[in-house]
Length: 288
Image 1 (cartoon, one colour):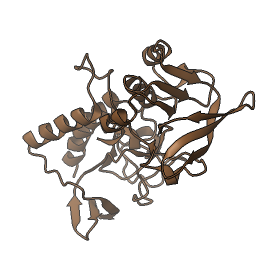
Image 2 (cartoon, one colour):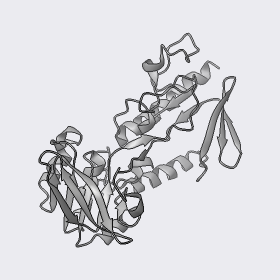
Image 3 (tube, helix red, strand yellow):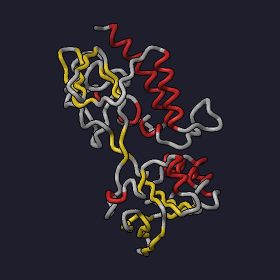
Image 4 (cartoon, helix red, strand yellow):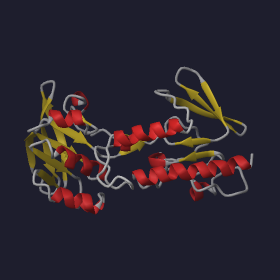
């Protein structure tokens, strides 16, 4: 499911004109994979990747190894934490990284704050506005359309109980065991304000889950996996042919979705890359 799996409403994915939640889409995907014979290993993290000649060797938590001729890395990304005093203390007690029905129910009739200017933040703001009395949407910049789809930004601007605060950041969180208020700073005017809120939802981007990857898998300056033409001239690339579009610096190892450098961070493109990777894997296996 990744980041898409925690989205409350995906409205720009082909085939779902009224939208679908990320969890529903993930559940349907798992059922479909099972139908076609995929073996799904639940809650089995990979801790290490190494190579034995042309084979990828995955070490799983618990010590078991899986050896593969071909590998697709689709580990996605994880949410960044706000660098704010007392933030970690309130995680799960007023600070959340996903807006699920449980959180929405807890926020019924209350004021909440949402931090972030991307599509995930916009979707969550619209969803929470159906239950909360008011949703304060805080963005660091001055233009919501810079990082959010125009249709979603327009919807937010026309939702009466969503209040957009531009050039604003959270500087402090307060509460006795549970979040009760936050202090915000307008970076343009220098004005500080305290908001009494029931919850804060953080949607400030993500870091790729690539710490487990070895040096043979080349990454960019933000630790996203490089693929295709970006690794064609890499000293780690060992074949005469150019890498396939989604192939990493290690032949036979591919990357798709949010973990890949240069991906557009959309559900449709991630699904499309996964489908493309299947074809590239077939092409690679023909050369073995």
